[in-house]
Length: 228
Length: 228
DNA sequence: TAGATTGTTAATCGATTAACAATC
DNA sequence: TAGATTGTTAATCGATTAACAATC
Image 1 (cartoon, rainbow over the protein chains, first blue to last red):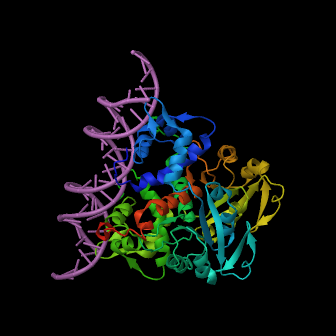
Image 2 (tube, each protein chain N blue to C red):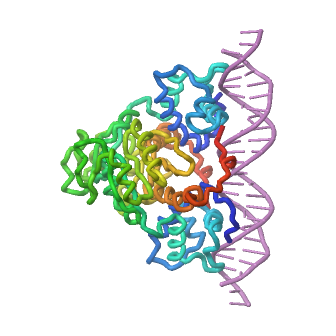
Image 3 (cartoon, each protein chain N blue to C red):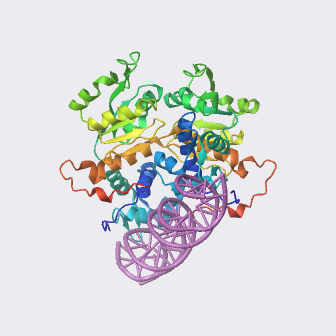
């Protein structure tokens, strides 16, 4: 039961994973136990139950969780029980790829506008949406409701555009630019630093002994512990 | 000093951030203290020093860290002191965006090949690299060295292509497909789940009281604690 | 009913921060 | 030298796991 505890951010960050998993299970099975959900997500049943308990008792002893209901409840917590609108700032190839990415629409996020500075792309239509000049950002936002902005522009341009978005009333930013934005506390930012992820992968490729031991296979397989 | 401690994964995941920050400081300033680095990265000086100490003593008491040297040392730890090659599986709009993304090349990752199943894109040239039919994946990998693969294809196709990449000897995978891959322990995978990040942002937009309190601004500003 | 499985608390584990001797 | 700042250990904090009473 929801005891008005402060929910740790790390729990929030896991909710989309539960949501994605339940999405795949919808229509396939009616119920799921914390044990099965944990197995599918490579985590522990304890963690699943504790995570879900922050939001209230969704389960039933001796039964588990109803897949469809849990899916809907988590969707509601994540705010996708109602339609959402977003804009893209930066209509380069990454911005256009996001505009064409079908999964955003599937979870209920509709593309409302695209902005760019480049005269070559302004006026072109991507996924049914025209690219507008970034000068019109404020005037457009004054007349169109939009919750989130996706930033797909160079690191140099990102801080300025982010500030303008905030002043124009944006509610949150998904930032792909390889820089860290300093914004007011009431405007959440989630970063997707592509290069950081590639570098982390590069570390494991380069340094994990298991990755280079074609000639030194003295690994103890018992040491590898899997959750649950 | 490197005391052969096991390095926590969370420390590895932070290295690219240090690297990115130092990259911007190169040529601008000669030295940096843990305090300044922490301020720039919104973390604590203690954490910076402890993180770096896992890899050896890079600093000098009373001085700090030499920017250029620290940059190079972290680059070496991350494996980008030598050229790296990667391929892209899935030449849809996201795959093409990655192919054109300049920052991967800047950190030393060169695009070696693109693969797709779609006859319409096979044969086209993206950023100087021809798109090959995915049937030729194994034969191409047999004759071309490549360390990493970027998976930018639908969730349905991802597990099969990932398995084929592993059997053909890939060393690591950067996965954009919205699914979790089950691969052998010696093949590291880093996921970039775009939708999960958008959903996490959506949660904060929808639920953080600070985000919707145009009418209820009873927040205690003292409660907001900043690191350092 | 008996078996299964939740929600929750306590125990454990790991990560962050604070403190400080070492020393440039 | 005196001031600054590291590297490292100890203290604190937070997250995960284990255990189990509640109950469907």
